[in-house]
Image (cartoon, rainbow, N blue to C red; front, side, top):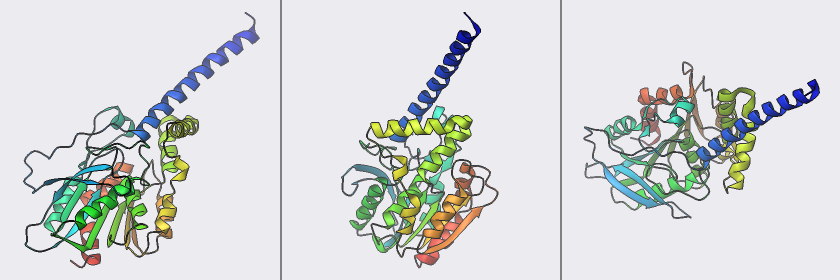
Length: 318
């Protein structure tokens, strides 16, 4: 074998190995997008919170959504807080040790602690699993990072409206990550949300590219391109069709508070600044300057609940 043929053979071997790696990573990411591994849902041991198991249909497509309601027992209509989780979490937050958690460098997120804080403030608290997560039904189109998930949140609001113990003039929503996206999309479709807080919402195309690049370096670009093609071939929504800045611009009169970590390695402060700038009734953008990764941005909000509590107390007239 001459030198030229040997060089061609080595090149083809390297190219095949790289192409195989790209396709394998792209397939895995596409599966995460369409149907992420579900975390179990169970009340924390020793919890004495009053919890009602609830189910309700999402608007339009009627998908079955499962959740918990923490009611108030004060004999009068209570304001309500809806907590909307992110991807690939569930109503409790996130505590995963599987390969997905290792890849995402996931840290424990405890949304029940935030629910307890709101409950102590007098809210009835609704926590539910978005479609394709937790105990809720799956959808054929998979995860859409807020676009279809907003139908689940609108279904949650309709469910609260069916109860006699909820003051529908004082409904607040706190959304994390994809739950923040979900909230922004829902605001253009209802005026029943009286105040909203969104913690680290993100444009999916930007998030996926930054995540893949963070994990694989320059191969991140072709990996996400192939993953997006797979998602579309399997009937999912193209990432470029999910525009969170545009959703924020249609949020209407509802006051919106943003919280974003400065060191978010997957999302982007500039991205959230663009959302905030587009929001018609922006209250504030709180930047967690000491948050060195994405999960620390979430925990900043969880460890400093007084930011959310005081914001909603003011805008829901508690």
